Image 1 (tube, rainbow, N blue to C red):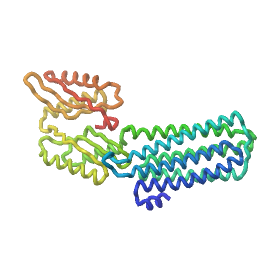
Image 2: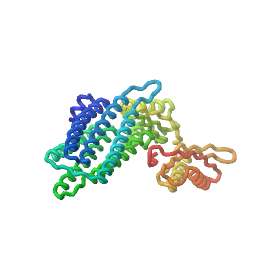
Image 3: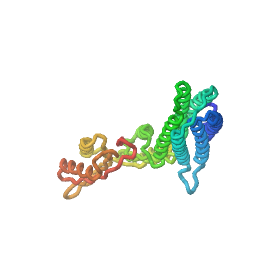
Image 4: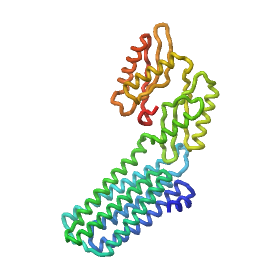
Length: 384
């Protein structure tokens, strides 16, 4: 089914998401109808709750389809970065619906705990619940594989929701069997547990979908790929000040400073950076903007100073690094100017870091004044 959908969609991300959503809508509506009928006939609140969960899933699938459709809209003057974040918004709506249905299930189950009613057991009930678990397991596998194929958090959320449904339906089935054997009515309590589980799952999904909307740390694999690709070109000596902006799946923008020898031809260096930017656009579908950062490589004093100051920074925290070091001599002192990258989780604040490092530099080089710019780490773990 995965290959069929991808082939039918001709590899188009929006069409893959739409086809997957349509398949899930049909399956969820069918399961809702079957479970609803069995739940009403048997008088089981947990089965009715499970049926309502499937109806909620169908609604979520509709929202997902709309999200994929809207996210595929091209950029326009009002939205030059495209509409890719619609997919994240649709994922947020899906998560909110999951949370809402969980809350409603808890409420109805509490009422049944207070006012219990007998539950009728039948083979049809068992058959429907077992079939539901098989279908949901298939849907979870389908959405997980498609989500991996097109890198969609919405499809991953749908897959997780289907896995939750397998566990929830399994609990309902176990409850029905135990109640039949022991004559102990656990239906309302199981319905309560299922509702709480679904509600918690919705809360976690909300956290996962809100994160990219707020601006999360980029994938370490992506950061490494960008750095390695830039560094693979001749003449590039280092990369720093890397930033990655995510405007939705397939719409990532990045910027970085590329260190190159100041003694080399500026025109040749600039041409190299143009080639790198073009390679990212053609091979990765990503717009990367590079800043030419010349560094002195033929002055042994500056090279030695760079090593010493970098070692000082490492003594404070092994993840701290320096860049853009330059010396500006004057009649009374020499300005030692450089930037350092501060890890986002470093307990030492930017001002304290600047002050501590400046004291060490000025102690090592008495006739100098350290002028330090502290950069925040926007790609995680101060990889720069």
